Image (cartoon, rainbow, N blue to C red; front, side, top):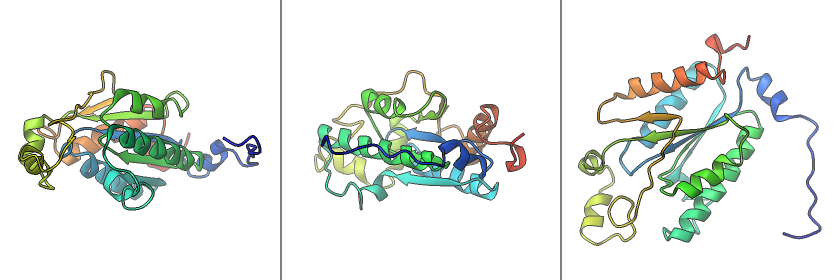
Length: 204
């Protein structure tokens, strides 16, 4: 980093930006295997929060790789950089007072810890999509498991590249047993219990 770069402090704080939105900033980090339901549940929660009047932004793994991270591949080092960039972008969005939802496989514990460490205590919410591999592979919405099994895709998480499951995720969801509505209700309840959102969208 250049010694000529100096941090510029903003006159409006992140708390002030969040207060006028009647919410508290946070990041819900959806992690899990391909096909586990990350994007589906993140999108459903995004809609539910929007309908309740909250200000959100959703970052999805595939979408981000079309733009910000289109220069990255799927090697271990590129995966680390992918998550690092998303963590920094998520932090910028929460600094603006938003509730951010990020849906990324993010298979490595160290990478998720790196992002967690960017946030104040209680603002990083790890949502582990604890859906069994067999269910994910049966769904195979993008046909990726079939290609990985055939050797057409290398370093595919869950097949020939490891997934390190969270040991102490704030929320665990198994979409082989829970409906989309069940998952959304669980997440809404968590946000309410932690005082990150408020009944009727209004702070006390």
